Length: 513
Image (spheres, rainbow, N blue to C red):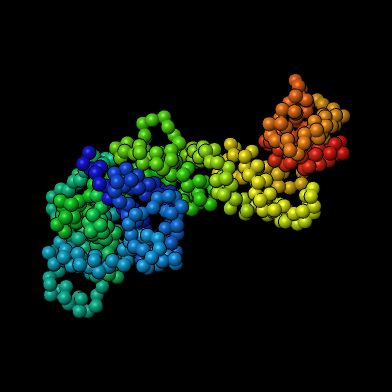
């Protein structure tokens, strides 16, 4: 189809805080379109609302986008400090650095009487809206200043009165075709004479977005459904500026909803991409999850790489209804992506989270102290790395996100194991029975050499020794090694701990009994 060819898209967030998960979803749709149709993905920061700016938000936006894997292939060059420079990574276009461009087109609209100056005070506007509400009329500007003569306007300017520039909505009807919702038509008399330049000289979103999208030759505008109401005004601006023939395609995407079918907001808890990043969700899981929110690939496949999403993406498969954010589904998708990682990748990506945990810090510090291993030497970094990898091999299929590493199995990182007779007793076994079974396990494991200390050997020998009474042998062994009633199998635990530590814990449990 023609509307899919040579897609040139832009993601244009405002730097008002952390990137919302819904905004990342818009960026992803943009990115998929650009990649699917060999186009361009432009990152543009819309910072003309100076009252809502948050310091450092642009830098965090660029970092978050880079983390997500959604990268723009056009923009200005940033230096190593994230400032505009002659080298470095591509950074976003910044609207506040393009004010002269907007001024030019605002003057054009004013000169052609498509816009007019409005000197109304905030108090008058408030009174006007209050009166409209009392009459149950839709709130819109009453065009009080449209009738001012040139002399009256010049006089007010000479007095230093502040003014805004309003776009003059023409009579008639306006329509546009949306790639998700089809044709949308409105009566122009229902539209407000929107402010396009504020009293501080900065353009509003409405003027800046139209000018930028035209000058940057954007082919498709993807944004949330809340902007549908503003789109007729943008269509009229395109026409007023003489750009009707080059108008982009519009694609309004339904919002992400909470469990109550309302727009997902901060009141529901974590909604920023950074929140999910800090919780340890892999970026590919986040991308996979949000791609399926309101988009149906019409297949049974649920786990996608970014490349697979690009291959299967079709804008026509976006649903008109909002999609509910299901954290359990995100957890499951995340777990599937972690299962696909090789152990080296899982180690590198989970280690930063593990390093923040108190139990790991204590373990790591202890193993930097001499005389704690059989050889009387501190563990090398390589030994510690291999040990953690063994833990990860055991935990891998149970993880939903990186920050869970070690959390349920802290016995791998401490010798402070809580055991008692009740926790080691299998069903109606006596303490003597428990002790005999621990001694049996001790005997079996003692005969496995260090060279043969592997998961397959440990499991084989213990299962053969247990025979039909696996619970009698393995239940007290698990408790002795972990101090927990729920944990990985005693075979896995013994393999990770190593022969020396395994034997120490069994002997301690026997002595306790």
